[in-house]
Image (cartoon, rainbow, N blue to C red; front, side, top):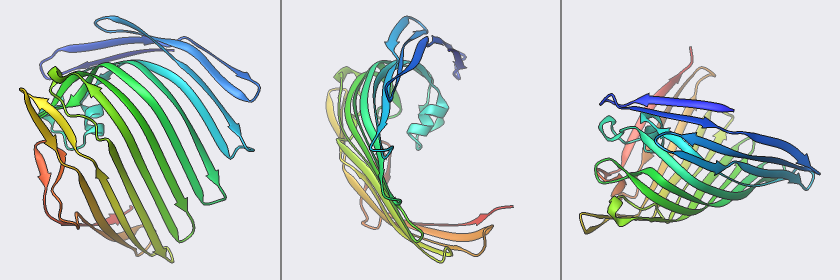
Length: 273
C-alpha cells in the first residue's frame, strides 16, 4: 500500500511524507503472519519493520500477538489535540514524528460472558516526537518502555472498566520536555436501575512528571481525581445528567500552564432528534 500525507502550518510551511508498505500476509498453522517493511520519505528516507504474528488459543478465549513496526507520520493539530486535549491552537505546530522502532507483544481475552481483559507490553523509540514542554511542544528523541492493561466487566445492571499504564521514558535533557508518568490509570463503575437511573463513581490519576528547562529541574505533581456521576433517562431520546469531579480537592496539573484546584460540577441534557 502507498500513502501520501501533506499539511501546511500557519506559516505556510509544507510538510510532505510519501509512504509505502510492501508486505506479505500468510498463515502458519493457526497463526496469522504479516511480514513486510515500511518505507517513508520526508526530509530523509527511513525504513522500518512491519511485522506481526497473531493467533487464538483456548478455543478462542485468548488472543495472542506480537510484532514490530514504526515509520514517519505528520503530527498535525488534530493528532496533537487528540493526545493533549487541553493544548491550545498556538501550541500545536505541525511537525513530523519519526518512530524508529516499536516492538510489542500482548494478549486479549475473556472469562465467561461478562469479563474481558487485555495486556500489552513493548518498547518504542522515536528520533523525533512532539513532546510536551512548558508552553507547547518540542521535538525530542524519546524512548519508552511500557506495560498497558485494561479490564472490563459488563452485565445487565452493572458495568465497570479500568485502564492503566506503567512506563519508563528516556529523553535528552537538551530537548527541555516533560517525562512520561511512571504510572497512570483510570477507573469507572456504573450501576443502573431499570436502565432509567445510572449512578457511577470514577477515578483517574498519574504520578508526577519531571523535566529540565534552561538548566532548572521542574516537576508536575502527582494527582488523583475522584468523581461521581448521575444520569436519568426519561426516554430513549431524552435524558439529564450531572457529574462532580476533583472531590478530593487536589491541585491537578494535566498541562504545565493550567491547574485545576477545586471540586467542580458539570450538568447537561441528552437530546436525540
